[in-house]
Length: 262
Image (cartoon, rainbow, N blue to C red; front, side, top):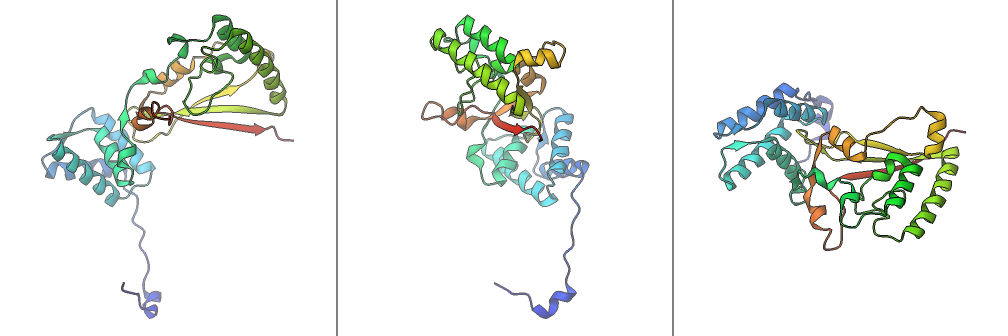
């Protein structure tokens, strides 16, 4: 490999190229793909939001060109003349070296309420969970970590055993609330965006304590909050893996436990 002469180093400086604006990113995509006879299919505001995210992630112009090049190869293989935002997402994930792990799907029902399934928790168990933990009781199972305060965890279990577990867990939660808190954050791929940038936040709090600290209010179910966040995209391969060993559902979940400051 060629080596820079040390004597030349004082005379050489790196030039930092500015991150392209969202408008520049959008124009690059249109221009590059138009040269190959391709056009964008879909609302222009979706492409504009994608370009704005590209700017936020700090992609360079060369990064955008590489993404467009991958999209062109994809369109040629599939004999298509028009590209979509989904194609650009695929092009981005391909250039990151993980093309086979990022197949996208759009079934919001996957973030569903297990009470509507074939093997729900007993009605008295579901009611007890809601009384103890409120909205958090409706969090769906992510296929990776079971949450004892959810209806999905107690689906199909013996009611007597579940009722005892919930009562004891309620006591533990009240003790935890005196010293800290547990929060759950779920997020997916927002419609029209190409990166998971928002999340639904749930905090496990004893309902009796919450009635004392805050006025009673009806919180939207996790499923409604998911819909309100416009989460629809998920990663398909984890879903495919459930039968053969299980990689979880196609969304990301973050558990955060913190102590109150002394």
